[in-house]
Length: 343
Image (cartoon, rainbow, N blue to C red):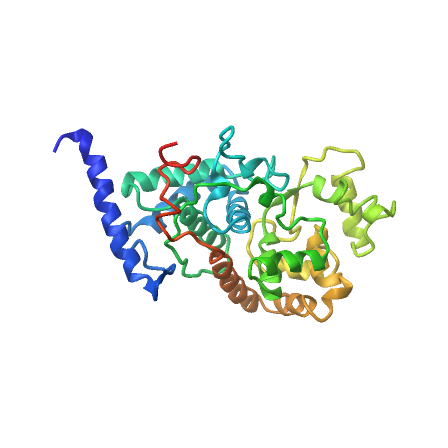
């Protein structure tokens, strides 16, 4: 066989094998995600992604938290279809990367590119970019001391992006009622809301999310010209030094000031003593509406890391099931996560 045709032939064979594996994941008339999706077509997919992440973490301690955030921001916008990864194409694709929740905030795209390149080298045309995000999220949590779970796979990549939809992602300044509504809209409940918010147990966040309108908890909370009364006074003083009024809004702060790079239950113990960094964090415990809804869940997770880990793993699976694309007539396996094939 001429060398120029070998990659194409390999991809064709891989496509046939992928279809065969997908058939094993069928239940009734609809394709379902399953843990074994790549067992025959790309058996080393998990380890390939894991090694890329380990290498990236050597020079970027924030990368694990950033990658799980990419999965979250992808799934909440038209489902877990890799739409967040698409670059803009004038007149064709208005990239979600430029939407307010992602612009100058979402990060880790080059690491996804490296994972994709490594997978294409091992098993071309097989592993979707949407599945790379799901794998990277689980691996990031595991490598940070958090729980493991069986990642359900078999998503295809979408061919569109939704800039306006990205603008409706849950925001750091929103109250509990709004947050509950946004989670309910994608089929997630209060346990999912509290458990997935626990991803804020690691990572960094900009001062803009606590010291600038509309998220100003330090100087003008809800237009009162006063700080957020639910914010612990000592913690507020510390944050005021980190994020002075009219200071540099890009300065980074630990979401969890106790164990900022470890995935543990300290996010919830912080909420118990009014040390949640974001308004959306503290609302889970301190909102008047939280008493009979989210506050008892916060209390449970603050008491038991096992309970948190178990719920977090299940909620990640639930989130990963938000409208996955499994129909090849409307989705594809992108060769490059940044663009639609043949574009």
